[in-house]
Image (tube, rainbow, N blue to C red; front, side):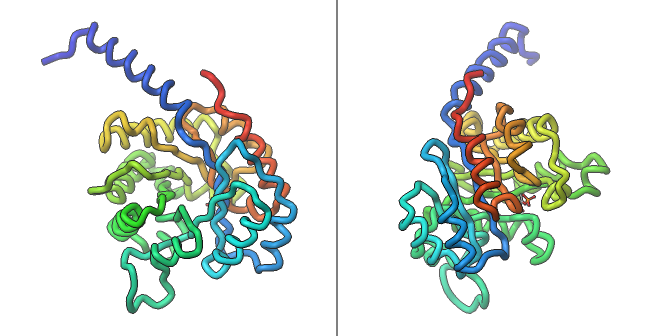
Length: 275
Ligand code: PEP
């Protein structure tokens, strides 16, 4: 049966109200992905210089051997900074040389784990099924996954962005309780290239990601924070922050330096605007 115009308008208005209501409730995050960078001495210097803020959730994801020392540094400077791993395994223990379990992450104070970063997909051949197992295990263990999705330049040029994102999201989130989940949209062509997506393009893509999440969890999709990642810096951060579907950023290069990371934190710490 065709929906009446009256019902169609009612649904549109209801969706707009839900969107505005949850937008103000969604957590804003500024997440640092240090990748394979920083010694203990460099991390110590970083935290000595970092100002940080109380009014935005900042999370730092150092390399695995640095998790424990970084946890101690965060405690010492008494700043509200969360700790995250850059990867996690789907099993709790066993013969998996080089891997890290959720129990180990929790033991050193991690609340978060980046899962499915494009560098893991590209260099370590992680596919959607593997990522699904990791996300499932993290949620079960009480670690909040920061699930990365994004298209390559080739896929973008072939106009396959939506198709790729839909496949990645359905694949990674199959059978998952999404109450504790963060999504990071990271177009591969924007990572480490200095060529960030425009805020308009990122907003359009985030709205698409939210529409896919809606297919998976209905209106609860409005409560899931979706971060943008890819060449974010102190200059372009404000453009991303002004967008209604962008709930923070995942930062690589610019998170390695305390003052450039502080610039980004300051932009997102001004609170969510009333729209
Ligand atoms: C990343 O790799 O997660 C990332 C966003 O890197 P960069 O900010 O350097 O583009």
